[in-house]
Structures are given as C-alpha cells and as structure tokens.
Length: 255
Ligand code: NAD
Image (cartoon, rainbow, N blue to C red):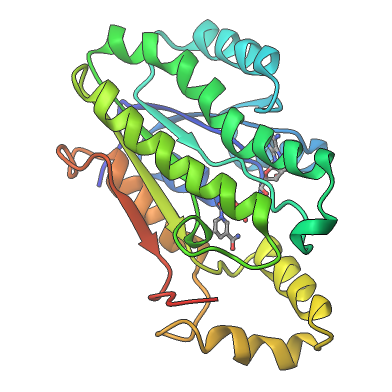
C-alpha cells in the first residue's frame, strides 16, 4: 500500500484520527500538507513530521481554505489525495434545546468545510488527470444518533456529498469515498461517551457496557485502523473503488 510520489492534503491533521492518518501517509511515502486550528497541536505535529507542510486553517472559512491551497501550491505542483477529516462533535442535547449557533457551526465545519476543500481541489485533480477524495463521515451518518441531531445530520450530508462527487468527478478520474468510523478509542470518543453518560444520569462505567452492547464486536476502534483504510483507499490497490461508504465500526447495529 505505497503512496510514494503522491501528494496529500489532510484537514484537522494535528490531532486525533487526522494526526494518525498524517503519520501513516508519511510512512507510506506521501508528501503531506495538513491543517488544523489548534496552535499547540500544530506545534507538536510540526515537530513530529518535519517533512510535512503544517498550516493553521479553519475549514469552515472559505478564505482560510483558499490560503491553504495557495501555501500548498507554493510547494507542490499537483494534488493526488484530499482527506476531508475535520469534523466537530456539536452539542449533546435534545433537539428542542439546540441553538441556531450550535446547529450552524456543526454544519459549517462538517459539511461546508468539506465542500470548500473539494471545490478548490477539483481544478488540481483535473490538471493531474485524476485524484482521490476521502471524506470522514461516521456511523452516525448511517444510524440516527439520539441527542446529536446536528452531528448525525451533518454526517448523513457527508455521505450525500460523497455520492454526488463520485458521480460528478468520476469522468475526470477522481475517486470519492467516505469512511464511517464507529466509536474510536481517542480523546473525542472518550469525551463523547462521558457526555452521553452524564445526559442519562449514568457514570461512564455504567454507560460503556450498555453502549458497547449495540456493537456486535463490543469494542472501540483503534485510530490506526481508520488510517489504514484511508491508506488503502488512497493507494493504487483501490483503482475502482469509488462512491462507497465504508463502515469501520465492529458492526454497529443501533444506538
Ligand atoms: P477530534 O475531536 O480529535 O479533532 C481533531 C482535530 O480537528 C483537532 O485537532 C481540532 O483542532 C481540529 N479541528 C476542529 N475544528 C476544525 C476546523 N474548523 N478546521 C480545521 N481543524 C479543525 O476528532 P477525531 O475524533 O479525530 O475525528 C476526526 C473525524 O472523524 C471527524 O470528522 C469525526 O467526526 C470523525 N469521526 C470520529 C469518531 C470518533 O469516535 N472519534 C467517530 C466517527 C467519526
């Protein structure tokens, strides 16, 4: 699964799943450009991946996205892979308690951010004669997730965007797929589980077995497994995989 000679942009690549994807891509020989909004995490990943272009950019702002592509093009003349990983959890609330700001912010990062990123990538893919887009959705984009209406809705939208782009960009040789992680063992997964437990008046220890019962394999997912699927999709081993929503969730059956 070699990515030698390929260039990749990874959003939210300074921590969590994006950081692990960035490491795997560099290990596989890709030249990586990543962005994030968290200064400390950006500084840390700059030290970890000295070969990468590391930029501060908020994907929900089209002006930041334009500046990111300018910085990328100052160093590289072609783009092969875009990993639209940035996504926020949004509020854990009943739908009637969600504010306009909470709804709009979740859509801005999780949906508009992917649109802004891919819109700028298309001319580069056309110039390169092909490309690959990997959009991070979620199992919450396949199973409606209670108390998380903005997040779950945004992740269904990511699958919709993926399906449209796969058709529209297929004719210029661009493959577009979505990865749908289940509950990932990382900082965000832990935080979300704590919030879900609190909302139900349960401790984390009481809530976790209850939650994991809905997953056939009863386990959380290692971030490396998500990164490995991203490497496979981006590699020459997947030349005709496009328009797919690939769940990596241990068979998550219901919430
Ligand atoms: P995370 O919460 O650990 O955050 C990763 C990074 O995103 C952080 O460094 C943060 O600074 C950055 N970020 C936040 N808003 C940004 C913005 N507007 N522009 C650029 N960067 C921004 O996230 P994660 O758990 O690594 O999740 C990565 C992706 O996978 C997300 O799209 C998420 O929805 C999806 N996902 C995660 C899980 C899980 O259990 N962790 C499950 C399903 C799907």
